[in-house]
Amino acid sequence: MPETLFIADVHLDERWPEISDGFLQLLATRARTADALYILGDLFEVWIGDDDPDPYYAQVQDAIRRLSDAGVTVFVQHGNRDFLLGNAFAKRTGATLLADRTVVDLYGTSVLLMHGDQLCTDDDEYQRFRLMARDPVWQAEVLAKSVDERRQIARYARSMSTESQRERAEDIGDVNMDAVASAMREAEVRHLIHGHTHRPGIHHDALGERIVIPDWRPEGSGLVRWTPDSHGIETWP
Ligand code: MN
Image 1 (tube, rainbow, N blue to C red):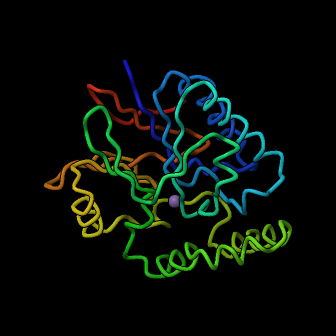
Image 2 (image 1 turned 90 degrees about the vertical axis):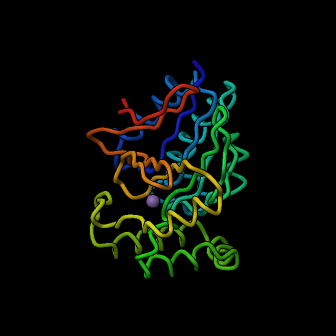
């Protein structure tokens, strides 16, 4: 049975080896038989630029490359953590970077794919940050700094956030349903898949269907599976 897999919010970080292992295991086993693997944002907890020589990131990129080389198409969307993923990452991994709103055809069904942070329009402070962080001029200025300097900035940003462990749903806030409605209407779809909110679930309403991909935690992770006959959320591993 052909199938397409979706994951998001893996938040890969050396501090959580169970999650790294689970991700590498997914790439080496389950994902090998899929038509495609879509990674819809925040694969990495932090990404300071494609030129970061840290061996941890090299190992992850090599693993994605092995999956692409095995014939599985890998797509990556930016999240609110790894918005600096660029062309060098894509080239190294064989993955294709997707626009923030992408409509794909899944075995005859049009589906809108988003990370989901753009839908949290009630969080003014975050949306202001997003506007800045997605500005190519701001990004070029950041990327012009040395790797060490960028690491320091990332460390500082992390220390300023309220908690040093993983994000919880309460900290993120949920999507704004007006924002969901306009995104789905503009894209002319009845199906939306997104992550980010750490509130996994499948919602049906007048707009159609909205599937929220699970975030990854040391105690358990998940993915969305789509086949010609059915789709749904599964736990992993
Ligand atoms: Mn996110």
